[in-house]
Length: 349
Image (cartoon, rainbow, N blue to C red):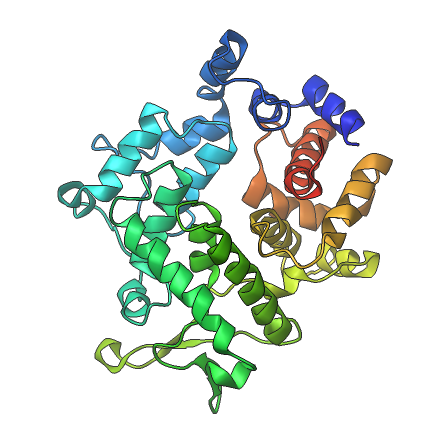
């Protein structure tokens, strides 16, 4: 399975994608001379050079902590483009993020991040920890260690809930989280997905049971659950980092068509693939969505199901290939992202 897809990408894709396939699927050692040569080439690719052009002399990456030009986004682009976590540019960014005397020189926070942190809903501290968890930072060190514990506390605490009214309130305009309630958000689950120190057999079993419980509560809930800031932060409402629970459900062809034809949101398909790719194994409720896209790869019908608008949004979120005017490059980018999403879940040997 996927051998034809892998062969196509190894023959036609850019060096970033070829490197990632060799490393993650074919298990080529990163210290192999051929892999080292590709690493050197990757550092000269447009997508990587653009990210590194935003790195300050003190190591800080980007304009701020969170956002399109924030450290979280740029670090993600570097790592998914094949730059290794041990690379000097990545490690300089990690050092800048964890050194107060450097971080304070930059916008090392985002609006309302402190309010989210004060209620445990995943703000500045959580974003910082998520970045560190992707870059090989020690799980025993702060600030990551505390956020791993907080994240698991939210996941474990959600086992107590039997319905949405247990942890949210319906206001006049919004449904919002009750104060200091335990219920996992995207940052909590993301941190746990990227770390291992918490994963005892008992904790993993609890994680699976909690995710199933949360999914059963949230799978049919429409609308966005808001966060009401504590009074000392103004008491107004804002959107927190909610987990994409609906992406755990099965998908059919008409669901895909609705996403790629969404005229109001060109990013919907790309965001859906991002959600699928980030679900840890202990969160997945069904492998059907992965089988759905794997079948498209095998039949080579993936591009036939795309629209120009959906591809434009996909490029913004996931683009690695340097030449999107070339249809073959577009196909390589899309094909690789779907392959990378399906491969770990379907446990291909």
